Length: 179
Image 1 (tube, helix red, strand yellow):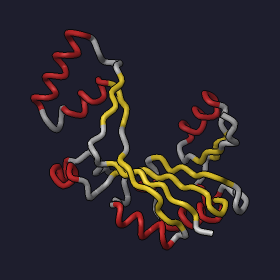
Image 2: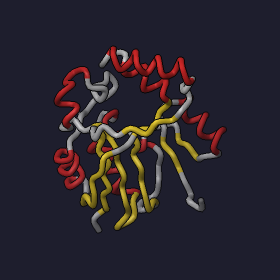
Image 3: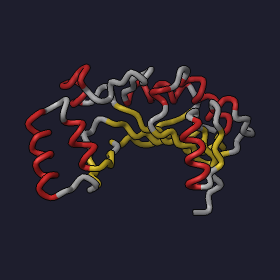
């Protein structure tokens, strides 16, 4: 689409897949080691990333360095303050052994502020997965819904149908680098 895109991915498998499948420039290392020039990017996207970082504030400071003045940062992450996370508690799917940090709108706003960003907008993030994926997820949460979805699948063979679902438990935040 005319963008000069770069990616940073720690997984060797995912890096190779993105390079081969999409022809992307992927750096298989932490962002802080990639060596991008100051004010190089117009936009930085952190898709399901910040909750996995050992030092999210250090990474945000690096993003501030490589993002142009007025540039946009997009982050999405599970919302620990969401209604569904409060109901499901430890059973909520946002609780994950690989998530090192959990964020709310307030904690993200504060972290972004000290890193040189101003929040422009919050939104909730919809996930898109196959019906089969959603069916398997319900196995641990609600056996009745699981059985109904399995029955629907057996009757109409809908395993590969894509479903967009928004439980209002994922934060999308758009922030601008302050000049």
